[in-house]
Image (cartoon, rainbow, N blue to C red; front, side, top):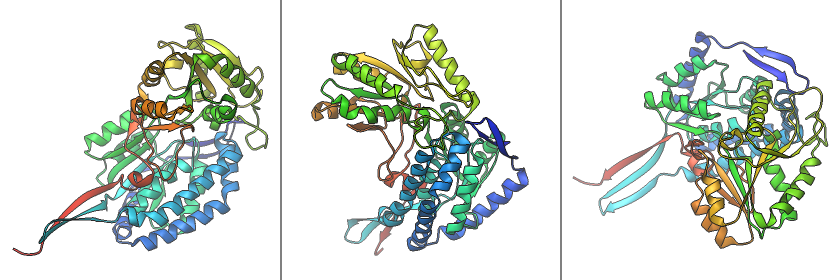
Length: 457
């Protein structure tokens, strides 16, 4: 079942059954038929639909934001911002896709040239998480559609109403007839779909375990995949960084979305000369974070999205403490009802602990000290993940040199890691492979075709 459970009240307010095989097959056939026509559409036609969707997202941002707050605990104000950010996808690809996908012509000799073009693959299966229920779907689906493909969207089981609301807006914008279809399917059905001949590629945003399983199935069927998985991003602060100026975005980098973000900075690496000052300022800011109803203004931290997510986080922190980690700070009071976890700062975290080895998906951060730049790079790279990293310093040459040594798909200097429609997004190592957004995301599910043309015999 796909169940809508309010993580603040802990009450179930909607349930949806898994679709049966007949329903899934109908949608597969519909998608395949839609692709035959959609791939022949011109960019002007596609752009018109994108711009209609942009207006609908902007108009309905408050409604969608409130729904996300009720269904997965995201602060309503942040969920609304997510919707508006999703709208920016529409305008970007509507205005730039045609140029980005323009065929390249290369003259080999006076009578011979080669055209290199990008052609769509067909029906793409998208498997998406709950933590950004609108952005995660659209940042994959929209460039996939703009490049001439169609998509089946499998949302996370705990955000069905967000998914259905988004589907309704997509159809209202004109993406009907099978271009984007939402499916409520269990894991066995998804495994079968990946291997179904109609499905030509897979996009997954999710856990490391899910990514491993999907990648294995896709490889077995000889199909491409894009995987955006977990992260244990390092945020590195050098001794010359202006702590007072950066502290607000540093705190946001970890505690955004109630700590449930793949690109959240889960490890703060601070040069020892300023570590005491930083911890003092960090504790001051984190202690001011208010916990409560995500629909209300003035609340900084809402509940975790599901009960099992809280239970997992409790186990990870408890085991880390048993193995010698220390709590530098932890909120003393949390609401009595709801799946809240208190904002927590850990220190003395060592490699054998869950807080070091695993991704902590909630409002918990580990603080590490270092002396030399080389130590910071080693710490940043000492993880099986490789999504993003941030460096804060006034020394641009040092920061750029560090960025070359850090093993991640993205490095941000004097800014926190974030997604931007113009920039390729993705990681390496256990954080996945492939890219979303930007030109790379637009071409992710296209094949490169070379057409050799000789004028004479």
